[in-house]
Structures are given as C-alpha cells and as structure tokens.
Amino acid sequence: MKSAELKSFLEIPYDELEEMNLKAGQRAEKASAKELEQEYTAWLKKEKHIKAVTLCFSDIEGRLHMLDYDKKFLLESLGNLTFDGSSIRGFTPQHESDLRLGVDWASIRYFPADVIGAGKVIFFASVLNADRSPYQSDFRSVLKSYTEHLKTKQGMTAYAACEIEGFLVDGQNAEQRYGEDGFKLISSGGYYHSLPMDTLRQFIDKAAEAQRALGFKNEKDHPEVAPSQFEMNFSYANVVRAADHVQLYKLICRQAARSMGHTATFLPKPFVGINGSGMHTNFSLSKNGKNIFYEAKGKDGLSDVAWDFILKLLNHASEICLVMNSSVNAYRRLDPHFEAPNQVKVSAIDRGSMIRIPMANEKTARIELRSVAPDANPYLVLYTMLKTGFEGERLEKDEATPDRVRYLPSDINEAIALFKSSRFIGEILGEDSKKKYASFKQLVADRSPKELGTRVKASEVLFHHEVTNQLLWNQF
Image (spheres, rainbow, N blue to C red):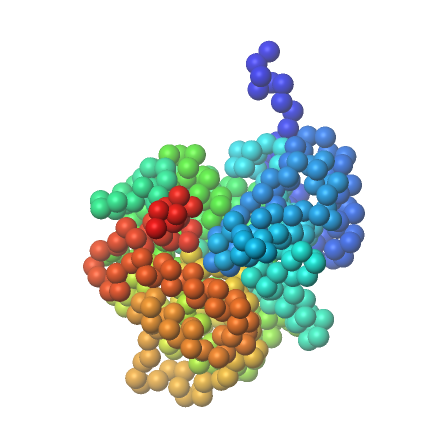
C-alpha cells in the first residue's frame, strides 16, 4: 500500500466548503463568543480527520503570519497559547517578548485542502499581552474592539469591501529574486483581452474557485487594465471580516500562483509605464439594518453622515497617507498619468480623485477610497478610516472640489514626515504605535534612493514588508 493511502485527513469538496463557510459566517453574526467556542471545540474533539489548527494574525505593517497547532495540544492549551513576539517585526522587544494568542472563534474558515493542505482548519487570533490584555500593535483586535464599541454605544455597523488588484509574474519567488531585469509578464493582454484557458485566466479561475469555497460571495473575476494584472471582487462584510478577506485573498492568490510556477505580487507599481495596483476600499455605515450613507435627495445620493465622513477624510488625507500607502513602491502608483487617485478631492466621475462616489441605490450607497495600495495593512486602514470619520475635523464643503487641487505626498519620505508631525495620528493610533509604525517605514525608506526615478529599484522590492526575509535584513 502506498504511504499516501495511509493518510486519512479531512478533504472537503468545494461546493460543500462554500455551504459550510457561509453557514459559519451567518452563525458568527448571531452567536456569542462563548457559544461559538463551545461549538467549535466540541467539533474539533469529534472530528478525527483534523490534524492541525492554523491560527492567523497580522503584524503592525499588515504581513500575515500563520502558526499551526496540533489539534490536541490547542484544545488542551487554549488558555496559554504563547509565542515569541520579538521575532515579529513591529511587535515586542526581546526583553519583553512573550505574547499570547486568543482564538477568535467567529472567524473560522474551512479551507480547501489543495490550498493549505488536508486536515487543517483556520481561525484568526487576537494578540494578547502576558496579562491577557489586548496588544496595542495588533490592529485586528483594535479594529474589532472599536466596532464592538460602535455597535453597543451607537447601534452602528461598519461595512467594507476591498477591490484588490495584483500582478501575476513569471517564476516562483520572483520578488525575492528581483534583480536588474525586473519582473517578467506572463501575459501581454489587458482588460477583457485574455483568452479562456491562457495562463492568467487559469490563475484567476483557480484563485476565484477557492475564494468562493471560503464564502467570499464572489461577484466578478477578471483581468485588469494592465497586462498580467488581475482583480477578483467579492461581497460586502463587516469591516473586521472584510479585512480578513483581504488577508485570505492575498494568501490564496499567492498559493494559486505558486502551484502554477509563478508569483502573485501585490506591489503597488511593479512596472513603470503601465497602470499600478490599488485596493479601492468601499465603505458604508448601517444602523438598525438601514444604510445611513444613503439619502435620495442628498448631494450625489449621500446623506449628511456620509458627507461628514468624506470631508474629514479629505481634511486629514496627507497625514493618514502613510497608512494607506505604506511602502516606497506605493508612491510610484500615485502617478497622474495612469488614473492615479492622488488628488485630495471627491468626485462622482473623476477616477483621479482620492474619494469616488459610485452610482448606487439605497442598498449600495457608499464611498470608495481609491488611494489605498494593496500592500497596506487592511485592519489599520479600516480602523483609521473609522476613527477619522468619527473623530477627525471637517474640511469645509466648498473645499472638497477646489479649483486648485491638492495632491497626496509624492514619496514615502514626505508621507513619513507628515505622519510623524501629526497630533491627530497620535490620538487615534496611540503614540507608541505611531512611533513604531513610522520607525519601520523609515528603515525601508533609508534603504532606497530619496528620488523614485524612472525605474523600479531592487531595494523597494527586496526590503518591502511583504517580501523581505530575516536573512536579508541581518546582512546590514
């Protein structure tokens, strides 16, 4: 008998996975955390074909980290799941390195076996201090806590959906092997031009199938404007789940590309001379089941609440830009020649505006923050949007579409300076997280030329927070 036949790990067909994940999402909205813990721990004990539980969390820059726990060990150690925080960039210093993980039972995803391996199930986790208090640099926990506060105190729920673009480039680990020759496109076609069953289409099909199985409720999957570029759109969700979707979307795309011998990259501008990649973030608020961003007689169909959010985001645009555009490479994307959303204004038609108002009805009324790059920390982005919309200062309404247009920072050094000098950033993020985040951005900025120039430099790829490795950093 072949050794492979000796294994009996959980493998669930895609159609069943989709049904299970959709039910789990619905259950998460109704049940308490305690009820979910009881249900899923009982299921894990009963399910003999689960070998490991994968816990996910993100560091302060937004890079996804995954730890596999033996199922029996996890169930026996739920109150004491510790890890070394000093090994995670942006977390604790070495002398106070121990951190804990708390399972968010509402976040369960039954994953396709051909994406992460058979016999596994995934949960997101909260990062906790040794005394089990929330860790301040874990912005998933910070966002979750703030949304729970909004729900309890104001009866509001924040919803989002992110349109994440990326490029499929030739070869595995193409980012880590980036050199003078740059990346190699796997397709010369663009929007609507890729033929069925070509490499880009096969990749999109493979990734989209896995996303649907995870309950993303995909809406459309297609090549984007630039050659070798892709985008897969999925349904609205509460902001925490929406940010989880961003992290899983990128994970799935990377896995699908790797299985085909290629690399899915979410660098905002991996090629000069063609469109870059964005993460257009659609956002709205609901109260008592009603979309409170909608007003039939309001300007562009939006309510005063929505316009208040818009005017506050515009007013603080420059100082929050580092959150939305968090890498050296991101500032190449803010190029006005390629529909770049670098203008600090709002428009229903101009795609160069930082904020766009899509055509919508009562159900779909929203704002679209177009200036977000796909390598941004989605939890930090959505938290910053919420805090700015509720606690920021308004721009005067007649300044929202001025004759003389203001622009977002043109490079990361300018963005860092504005971020560091902002009192408002310190108030909404906390001074410690503000300093920590800025320090890591400055480290990368200092390893690249001050001027972006006309060519993507190896440094802005190799030292990117989603690309760099421990070996490379330790060579300095």
